[in-house]
Image (cartoon, rainbow, N blue to C red; front, side, top):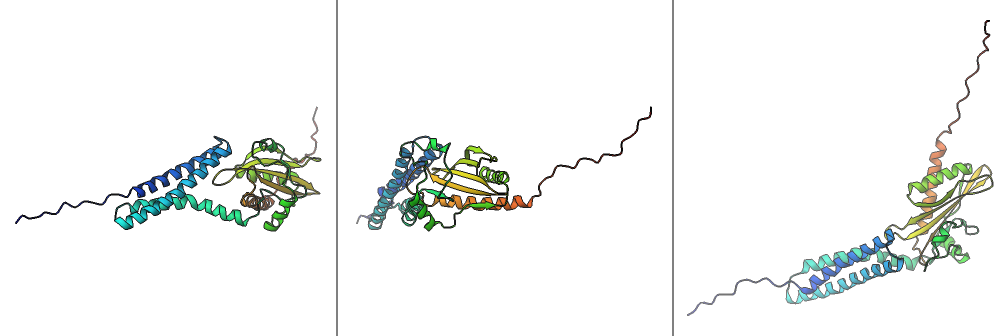
Length: 283
């Protein structure tokens, strides 16, 4: 009787869907990172950058669907590739988590993009106004009473900063805080007896690097000073709370810097040396 030998052990093939899911997840990361670099360094206009960004998110979503299909196939036929599926789903979760959070913010926060401590007479964009004239850019003119009312309801703590400093000293404190934040200052002028101090700078959002414009006004109020701040997104109808957060943190930093400056003694000019008695010259 002939002896039958079993065929040598063969490993199951790797699921093609698992490989596709992983590759799509990696490609989505590349697309999202490229879009962020485009916006942050200004390589292209905002529309191509956003198209690349949302394309990356769509690819991540497709990777999730393919990964679920791969999971079902592996469960059914016992093929390999579960580690690739899990890696893909982990990458997709990282890519989609922040946009999902922003989506929740969009639903819960007011649809405004212009925040100021003085809605009646907000600081004006002068030098920055020339940068807000491109296609799709928001106007340099303040958004108006609707925005002011929405701001009052959502962010009631944003108010004018009052310092017990002369205007020039308050200006120095504010300029120091702005420089510390590494914003790009496009215009600055110190207060004069008949002219208020003014600072205009460009800030960027943390992740995408969208430009948001900031104007700060320093006005004398007797021997004291009043500081008003305005922060406005250059694009989009909703800032997802970024401008309010920036203004609130700037107010806090100015007050902290003012307290520190108040503790420093003011340097006084050295008193002139006393003159001794005049010496008589012998002839």
